[in-house]
Length: 160
Image 1 (cartoon, one colour):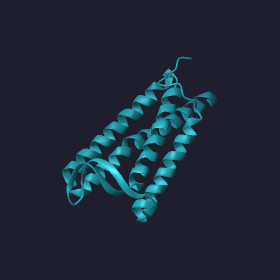
Image 2 (cartoon, one colour; image 1 turned 90 degrees about the horizontal axis):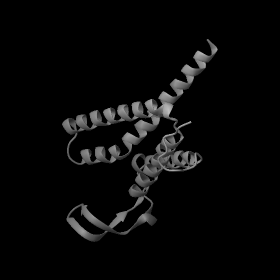
Image 3 (tube, one colour; image 1 turned 45 degrees about the horizontal axis):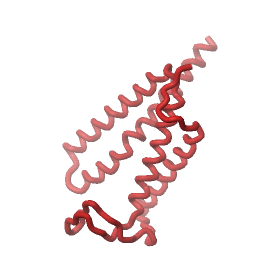
C-alpha cells in the first residue's frame, strides 16, 4: 500500500513522543500551577534579546531554564507523535490528516483572533506561549478522534 512518508522513522517513536508530551505537561503543572522552579536550573544564559527590567541584546542574563526545558520537551514530544502519524498513515487516511490539520488551524486562528481582541499586556505574551503548543495538541487530539471514529465506522459496517 502507498504511504505518505516524510522521514523514515520507526513507529515505536510515538511512545517516546507521548512520554515527552505527558512529561512536559506534568512539568508545566508543577511550574505554573504549583510555582515550582528548581534552583539548580538558575544560571547565566546567552540571550539574543531579553526584556525584563531593562532591554538587553546579545548578552548573558540570569535565568531559570525550567520554562524553556518544559517547552522543548513538549514540542519534541508532539513533533515525534505527528511525524509518526504522517509516516504510518496510508494514503487512504489522508482525509483524516487533512481534516485534523484544518480543524486545528481554524481553532488556533479563532483562539488568536479572540486573544487579540480581549487579551492585553503581559497576558498576551502568555497566550503566545500557549500558542506554541496549542496547534500541535489540537492536531493530535483531533487526529486520534477522527481515526477512532473511522475505525468504529468500519467495525459497524463490517458487522451489518
